[in-house]
Length: 270
Image (cartoon, rainbow, N blue to C red):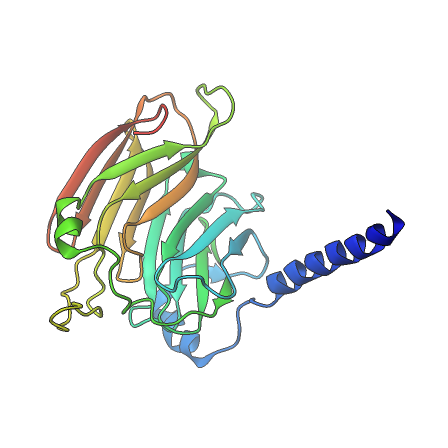
């Protein structure tokens, strides 16, 4: 038994050290691209302040460049609620992946989605409160995400376009004021305009969700303005405070003017 104990302990320490090193290996890196972008991205009326009020989780090496997860969690509430997030992939053809505005029920913020990464890039998050902007992010090694072929046959994708599903991950009893953990999934190819038809080799025209709004009852949870960098079949996981309304209401509009609206019951999976 003693001969197994020491190697096992060493292995555990080694694995934890690797995980810790991996965490530290992908902070934001210096680059010229952000200097060109920042004037268009940052709100000039708000100061950019140092200090980490939120955490960002994104992989150092992405498993799939077309579906790179990014998780943002507010860790310091002393500066007030995060009202807006801007997700920026510096080296993408259209760097601003999304701008998201949040209602009061989303505070403190916990929000996750998936983006395309077209080249090794900083994946930058700009968070705005009422008075200031804060920047953090991760450097992600991924390539080709914006041009990666769609995973679904175009005919199948169009048959199911706009279908939605809501899932909650709550483990305890739910009442007014409960903190909920929800996931919204929307069927949509979100074509970037950089993908090729695998048969004709012609470019597939861009078609993506450009506007998304989610309410509980009449209360806005969040609204999102999206671009080509949000992944195919978008997924959004988020925390919110339950106001007692029985449903979430979702409205999405894509760049061809298709409007998809659905009322999704909060209880269970729909």
